[in-house]
Image (cartoon, rainbow, N blue to C red):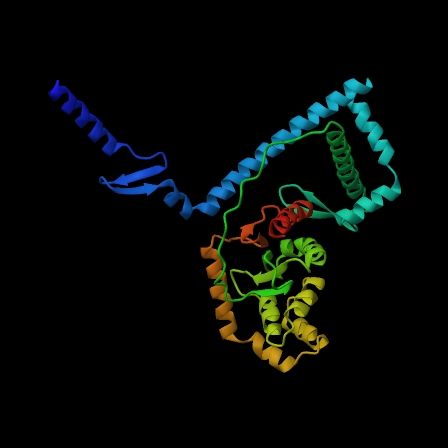
Length: 335
């Protein structure tokens, strides 16, 4: 009997020695444990990117299912076909005034984007441009109609985005702030004044600043694999306390990427143009900006524009409404 108990206890003892905790990823010898936290902490940003892609795919699939269901419910309820419901909605909004409003809100004034293997822009006044405008406007009107039906049928969704990891950027060498400098909430824009996508995102950023400038701190940090002339111009202007003024000049005058243009901007801003020209050539400034770029790359930031809200990346930089939701959440937490 004693022998049996000893054997049983031995089996339990040696089995337990080899059982790792659920969060274990690996064991070196009998004691050196590597956890999934150790593994994941090295690839936080990559994991988040993968999870966010899954979230977007699920959301797209859910949206398609919801749209199909609610238009079918509305068709059954009204006794009209789905096609007739959409046509009636098109006819209701098919007027010059509403189309013009759509053109302005969408930034479609002279040219309309068209993708066929690569992105190009078509003159909106041509026959093909008018066809693209009509197609784009109908999609917009359809979405508005489906959104109204979602409110009517009180749709609730339970797919939520993953929480972005926190990125500590306390050691940034070059960053500029405005707004409420003592605020507990910070938006940091990592961007490049010579980047076309960055310029497209700027109007939303300016709206956010006007809306929240008394409540949060706004930061700007330049990022480019090569220190281009535009980045050097805004940083050279910093030495004369004209960073934001020079930034605004460059944003308002896109494709002005030459030394003479920037010197003219400096003159308009009543800067010392000789000093500004010398600062543009300053190799020390170039090296600092290069170090800043490498620091951001080491933090897994690889694209412009990147926007962080209290050190967490905002995934959709063009979704103004969602950004406001996230800002308001934080404001409620700190108040």
